[in-house]
Image 1 (cartoon, protein in one colour):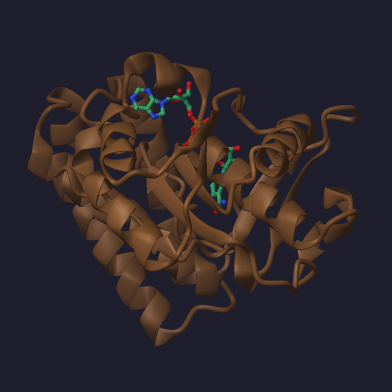
Image 2: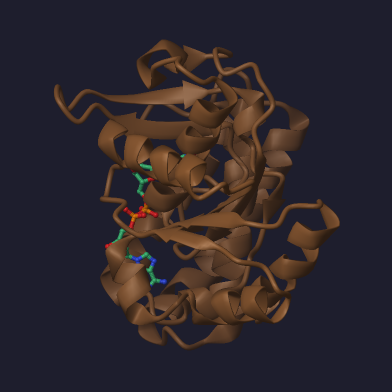
Length: 249
Ligand SMILES: NC(=O)c1ccc[n+]([C@@H]2O[C@H](COP(=O)([O-])OP(=O)(O)OC[C@H]3O[C@@H](n4cnc5c(N)ncnc54)[C@H](O)[C@@H]3O)[C@@H](O)[C@H]2O)c1
């Protein structure tokens, strides 16, 4: 609980000074960023916020946030939200690392190649596991074509699993995002690239989801259930990072 406040120390340790926080309007309105903003201010770090990410983030979102990053002289990224905000932050990182290269050209596997600026992910749903996967799922704003960019540099260097930011997640989103994590775990277990390690991660995730999803759904403020759902989503993400997903996801 409250671990999000430790981020200012990480940012300073990495010799960064001006993070761009990427989030969505709902999260901003709910005040979920307050703890992080306070910690950044107290550490003397100035920051910018891009809060226009839509569900299924678009190429326009990525272009706008990339523009803000450059204009404000930012030097690191914090994806704060569900998969949409985290994926948007990952794609911004890929654009910064590959100036002039359209996102479309990074679609598929191993086409980012370059090291991203420091990328930190704070999931507020549990979830997509995007805080540990090598994927960013982006929708072309014009054609509505949705595609994944998959490459190792997209794995966030830090993932902050703070149950405090998930306590207000409504029951419906708790249930649907929990099913996303369960699907990742099952796919990681049965996929063609499954290994002993991915199966261990998958089993851990399934166990945690079965033991906690009802509790998190019934009582959103159950910190232990929220913490375990975040862990489950993370393990499912680790499993599907190596084992792959695709059958249902
Ligand atoms: N990169 C990956 O590995 C990966 C894996 C699976 C899915 N995805 C992508 O992730 C996206 C979906 O992400 P998602 O399911 O987390 O949803 P989301 O990020 O689209 O958020 C859904 C809604 O929940 C709200 N919300 C988020 N956290 C909240 C909180 N703590 N309290 C109250 N409201 C909150 C948001 O404001 C938003 O309205 C899709 O674009 C999908 O393609 C990515």
